[in-house]
Image 1: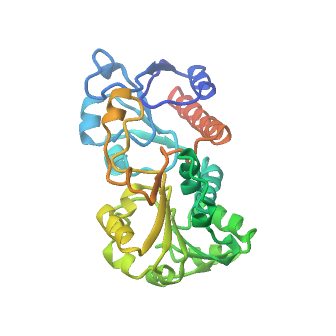
Image 2 (image 1 turned 60 degrees about the vertical axis):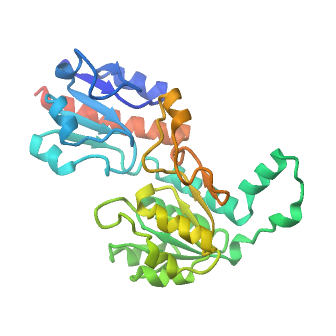
Amino acid sequence: MSFKLGIFESIPDSFLKNLQEVVETVDLVGKEVYLIENEVDEMDGVLIKSTIRVNEDFLNVYKNLRVVIRAGTGLDNIDLDLLARRGVRLISAPAANAESTAEFVLLQILCLTRNMFQAIESVRSRNFNRDVLMGVDLQTQTIGIIGFGNVGQILARKLNLFGVNVLCSDHDLSKREVAEKCGATFYEQLGDLLELSDVISLNASLNEFSRDLLGPGEFAQMKRGVKIVNSARASLINNRALLEALESGIVASCAVDVLDPEPPFYNPLEMTQYAHTLLDHPAVFVTPHIGASTEQAQNKIGREIVAALTAYLGKQSK
C-alpha cells in the first residue's frame, strides 16, 4: 500500500532510514506548513515534534491525512478530539525519552545548586573569583517534583541516590502509592510542596488545568531563594509572575529547556530575530529544548514509532 509521510521536524538519519523502509517520506523540515504546493492532497501522514500545531486550520489544509505521528512526549500541540472526529490515527512514543529527560533535569538541578551556569560565564569573561560561586550540597536540599509521570518517577529514584528529601505532587491522587515506591513524599495540596521545597522541578503535562500552574499565588508560597527547573512545557509557568519572583528574590535562579513560543529551530534568519524576556535575564539559564536529545532516546522513539506505523499499515492492507 502506497503511503506518503511528510516529515516536518528533524529526526536522526537512522530513524528516517527505518521509516523509508516502510513508507515514502517527504522532507518538509523548515517549510511553512500552509504554503506547500502540490504536496498537500497527496499526504497520507505527517511527522511532527513540538513546534507544529495540529489544529483545525492544519487539518483543513491536509484534508486527506490518515496518521499524525508525534515523535516525542507531550500532546499539547495536537487537538486530540479533532483527530478523533476526523478519524485520524495518532501514533506517539509517550515514554521513550523519559530516562533521558530525567537525566537532563538532574543535570539542571546540579547546575543550579552549584552555580555551574554562572561559573562557566564567569570564566569565559576571565573572572576567576570563586568566592561568589558558593553552592550547596544536593543532599541538604528538599526537591519538589510537580507532575509524577514517567519522568518525575525516574527523577525521584535518581535523586534518592543523592540522599535528597524528595517531595512530589500530581493531580492524579493515585500516584500516592507510586510515590512511596519511588522514595518520594506525596502532597495532595501543591501549596504544601511549594512551601517546603528548596528546588522545584516541573514535570507535568500541559493541559487546560495545568496552564499557568505556577502563578503569582504559587510563587508567594515558596521559600525565598528557591530554584526552579522546567523541562516540561513553558506555559506551566506564568512568565510575568516568574520575572516578578526573580526580581523580588523569591526565585534565586531558574533553568528552563522550554520557551513559549518555541524558537524557530529550522530557520537561521528567524533565529537571530527571536526574542523572549527570559533570554537575557542573568538568573535564567535557557537551553534549546534538548531534554530528550540523546542517541538512545531518539533511537527508542524511532523504533517504537516505526513498529506502530508498520502495524497500522498492516491492518489497513487487510
